[in-house]
Length: 166
Image (cartoon, rainbow, N blue to C red; front, side, top):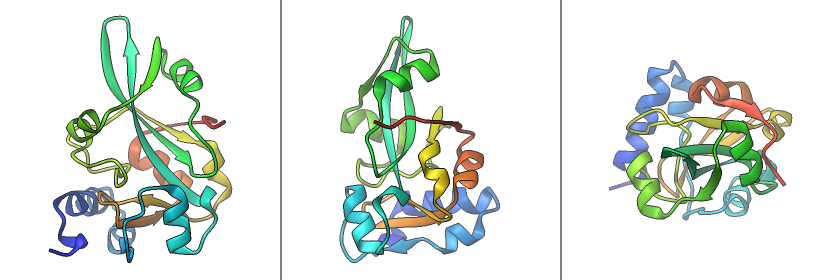
Protein backbone atom coordinates (compact mmCIF):
# COMPACT_ATOMS: atom_id res chain seq x y z
CA UNK A 1 0.00 0.00 0.00
CA UNK A 2 1.41 3.39 -0.95
CA UNK A 3 1.19 6.28 1.50
CA UNK A 4 -1.53 7.88 -0.66
CA UNK A 5 -3.64 4.76 -0.07
CA UNK A 6 -3.18 4.96 3.70
CA UNK A 7 -6.61 5.31 5.38
CA UNK A 8 -5.61 8.42 7.38
CA UNK A 9 -4.26 10.14 4.23
CA UNK A 10 -7.47 9.25 2.38
CA UNK A 11 -9.52 10.82 5.21
CA UNK A 12 -7.42 13.99 5.03
CA UNK A 13 -7.81 14.17 1.24
CA UNK A 14 -11.58 13.67 1.61
CA UNK A 15 -11.82 16.36 4.31
CA UNK A 16 -9.87 18.81 2.14
CA UNK A 17 -12.04 18.05 -0.90
CA UNK A 18 -15.23 18.35 1.18
CA UNK A 19 -14.04 21.80 2.32
CA UNK A 20 -13.64 22.79 -1.33
CA UNK A 21 -9.86 22.53 -1.22
CA UNK A 22 -9.49 20.12 -4.14
CA UNK A 23 -6.15 21.76 -4.96
CA UNK A 24 -4.77 20.86 -1.53
CA UNK A 25 -6.22 17.36 -1.68
CA UNK A 26 -4.60 16.83 -5.08
CA UNK A 27 -1.44 18.52 -3.82
CA UNK A 28 -0.75 15.93 -1.13
CA UNK A 29 2.89 15.05 -1.53
CA UNK A 30 4.53 11.83 -0.41
CA UNK A 31 8.04 12.41 0.91
CA UNK A 32 10.87 9.93 0.26
CA UNK A 33 11.06 9.04 3.96
CA UNK A 34 9.14 9.71 7.14
CA UNK A 35 9.39 13.27 8.44
CA UNK A 36 8.36 13.11 12.08
CA UNK A 37 9.75 16.57 12.90
CA UNK A 38 9.36 20.00 11.36
CA UNK A 39 13.08 20.07 10.61
CA UNK A 40 12.88 16.77 8.71
CA UNK A 41 9.84 17.91 6.73
CA UNK A 42 11.45 21.28 5.89
CA UNK A 43 14.62 19.57 4.74
CA UNK A 44 12.67 17.14 2.54
CA UNK A 45 10.72 20.03 0.98
CA UNK A 46 13.68 22.42 0.72
CA UNK A 47 11.92 25.17 2.69
CA UNK A 48 12.34 27.15 5.92
CA UNK A 49 11.36 25.21 9.03
CA UNK A 50 9.03 28.05 10.04
CA UNK A 51 6.78 27.28 7.06
CA UNK A 52 5.93 23.87 8.53
CA UNK A 53 2.69 23.81 10.52
CA UNK A 54 3.30 21.38 13.35
CA UNK A 55 0.00 19.73 14.31
CA UNK A 56 0.39 19.24 18.04
CA UNK A 57 -2.34 17.55 20.06
CA UNK A 58 -2.46 18.47 23.74
CA UNK A 59 -4.72 17.59 26.66
CA UNK A 60 -6.58 20.72 27.75
CA UNK A 61 -7.46 20.18 31.41
CA UNK A 62 -10.53 21.92 32.79
CA UNK A 63 -11.95 21.55 36.33
CA UNK A 64 -14.66 19.17 35.09
CA UNK A 65 -13.15 17.55 31.99
CA UNK A 66 -10.16 16.95 29.75
CA UNK A 67 -10.42 17.51 26.01
CA UNK A 68 -8.08 17.50 23.05
CA UNK A 69 -6.59 20.76 21.80
CA UNK A 70 -4.87 21.13 18.44
CA UNK A 71 -2.12 23.71 18.16
CA UNK A 72 -0.94 24.41 14.62
CA UNK A 73 2.44 25.82 15.53
CA UNK A 74 5.22 27.14 13.29
CA UNK A 75 8.08 24.68 13.11
CA UNK A 76 10.42 27.56 13.99
CA UNK A 77 9.48 27.43 17.67
CA UNK A 78 7.78 25.45 20.43
CA UNK A 79 4.19 25.77 21.60
CA UNK A 80 3.85 27.57 24.94
CA UNK A 81 1.46 25.41 26.98
CA UNK A 82 0.83 28.17 29.53
CA UNK A 83 -0.21 30.50 26.72
CA UNK A 84 -2.41 27.80 25.16
CA UNK A 85 -4.16 27.22 28.51
CA UNK A 86 -4.82 30.96 28.80
CA UNK A 87 -6.22 31.08 25.26
CA UNK A 88 -8.74 28.28 25.81
CA UNK A 89 -9.52 28.93 29.48
CA UNK A 90 -8.06 25.63 30.66
CA UNK A 91 -6.50 25.00 34.05
CA UNK A 92 -3.51 23.56 32.22
CA UNK A 93 -2.46 22.19 28.84
CA UNK A 94 -0.39 19.02 28.93
CA UNK A 95 1.44 16.85 26.44
CA UNK A 96 -0.78 14.10 25.06
CA UNK A 97 0.38 10.50 24.87
CA UNK A 98 0.24 8.54 21.59
CA UNK A 99 -2.98 6.70 22.56
CA UNK A 100 -4.79 10.01 23.28
CA UNK A 101 -3.60 11.46 19.97
CA UNK A 102 -4.74 8.37 18.01
CA UNK A 103 -8.09 8.27 19.83
CA UNK A 104 -8.96 11.88 19.00
CA UNK A 105 -7.41 12.23 15.53
CA UNK A 106 -7.35 8.72 14.07
CA UNK A 107 -3.73 9.54 13.19
CA UNK A 108 -0.36 8.88 14.79
CA UNK A 109 2.15 11.36 16.16
CA UNK A 110 4.40 12.55 13.35
CA UNK A 111 1.61 12.54 10.79
CA UNK A 112 -1.25 14.36 12.50
CA UNK A 113 -3.06 16.57 10.00
CA UNK A 114 -5.09 19.68 10.80
CA UNK A 115 -8.20 17.94 9.38
CA UNK A 116 -9.64 14.46 8.87
CA UNK A 117 -10.35 13.72 12.54
CA UNK A 118 -13.36 11.74 13.79
CA UNK A 119 -14.75 14.90 15.48
CA UNK A 120 -13.71 18.57 15.19
CA UNK A 121 -10.99 19.51 17.67
CA UNK A 122 -10.69 23.00 19.18
CA UNK A 123 -7.73 24.55 17.36
CA UNK A 124 -5.30 27.43 17.82
CA UNK A 125 -3.38 28.53 14.71
CA UNK A 126 -0.01 30.18 15.37
CA UNK A 127 0.11 33.68 13.87
CA UNK A 128 3.84 33.15 13.17
CA UNK A 129 2.67 31.05 10.18
CA UNK A 130 1.04 34.13 8.64
CA UNK A 131 4.33 35.39 7.24
CA UNK A 132 4.69 32.43 4.86
CA UNK A 133 2.75 32.49 1.56
CA UNK A 134 2.73 28.66 1.51
CA UNK A 135 2.61 26.51 4.62
CA UNK A 136 3.04 22.75 4.63
CA UNK A 137 1.05 20.55 7.01
CA UNK A 138 1.03 16.82 7.66
CA UNK A 139 -1.57 14.85 5.72
CA UNK A 140 -2.29 11.93 8.05
CA UNK A 141 0.95 9.96 7.71
CA UNK A 142 4.58 10.76 8.56
CA UNK A 143 5.49 10.70 4.85
CA UNK A 144 2.62 12.89 3.64
CA UNK A 145 2.21 16.68 3.55
CA UNK A 146 0.00 19.19 1.78
CA UNK A 147 0.38 22.87 0.88
CA UNK A 148 -1.94 25.45 2.36
CA UNK A 149 -2.05 29.03 3.61
CA UNK A 150 -2.52 30.62 7.01
CA UNK A 151 -6.03 31.81 6.08
CA UNK A 152 -6.97 28.35 4.82
CA UNK A 153 -5.70 26.68 8.02
CA UNK A 154 -7.87 29.00 10.09
CA UNK A 155 -10.89 28.39 7.83
CA UNK A 156 -10.39 24.62 7.51
CA UNK A 157 -10.07 24.07 11.24
CA UNK A 158 -12.33 26.84 12.55
CA UNK A 159 -9.20 27.72 14.50
CA UNK A 160 -8.39 30.76 16.58
CA UNK A 161 -5.37 32.75 15.35
CA UNK A 162 -2.96 33.58 18.19
CA UNK A 163 0.71 33.78 19.05
CA UNK A 164 1.52 30.46 20.72
CA UNK A 165 5.27 30.02 20.37
CA UNK A 166 8.29 30.45 22.55
